[in-house]
Image 1: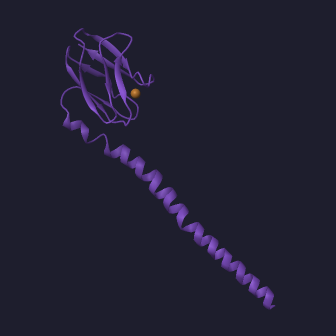
Image 2 (image 1 turned 90 degrees about the vertical axis):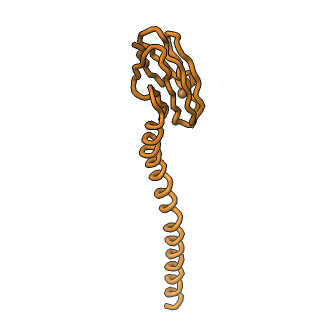
Image 3 (image 1 turned 120 degrees about the horizontal axis):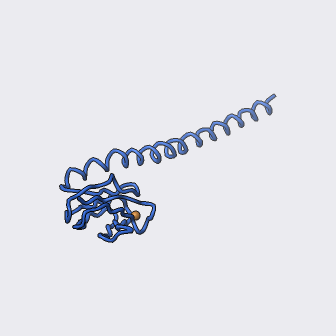
Amino acid sequence: MTRFGSSIGALLLIGALISACGNTPAPSTGYGAGGGASSVATSSGVPGSPAPATAGPTITISGMAFGEPLTVAPGATITVVNDDSVEHSVTSKPETGFDTDIDGGATKTFTAPTQPGEYPFVCTYHPNMKGTLTVK
Ligand SMILES: [Cu+2]
């Protein structure tokens, strides 16, 4: 009886140690900090603040995508805001008209074509990024 009793005691002790180890590090660091915080920050913080600061026609690149199609006057100065951390370009294609590179986090301007028309453009680094500039 004494041997049996002490071995149960040892098993209970081991079980308590395992559950103590398991509870503390895994759930708190795994779920709390990682997924929740970063997705909230990118969706709510970024788009609101830079937009009001810039005046005039603006192309905002965010999340590997150009914003909505833009219509400008011939020869207008267009501001490009790159909210991504990687370099992008705004390159008219197939028509020529403009081609500008914007570093990650940078803002640049370029001059719209003087010839009215519809100018599809791409990013030369990410050809699946597509946008349209209308000049009229
Ligand atoms: Cu790109």
